[in-house]
Length: 120
Image 1 (cartoon, helix red, strand yellow):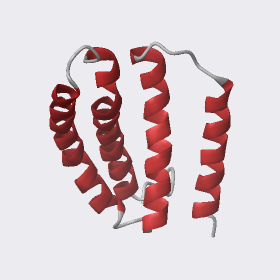
Image 2: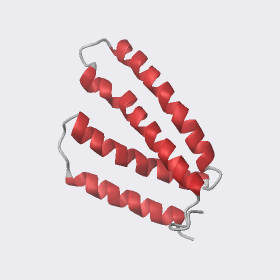
Image 3: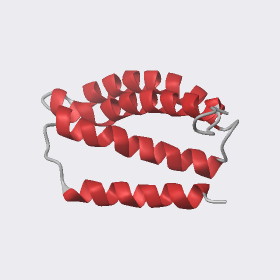
Image 4: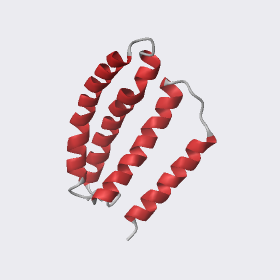
């Protein structure tokens, strides 16, 4: 465990790998809506598939490492929090869509999920 936080290093490693995975996943799923909207769908699908391969190179070890210190439900909730944390900046910075108050409410719901899945 990390002395300052009491969180095992495996959790930090998993969070780092899953964050990297989520960046690639978000681009694989959504970037083509902006960057390739003039191309046929199968071009976007093939490019997204290649990006998703890189995503899996981070996601699989991240989940394996995380599962050594977390239960599967805990790992899933962490993944969802990471997804939202990555998605909001993507929407604002890359897709150039505005920030909505609903993002805050969604984040608060996710914090509630984290509380309930980790409480003793």
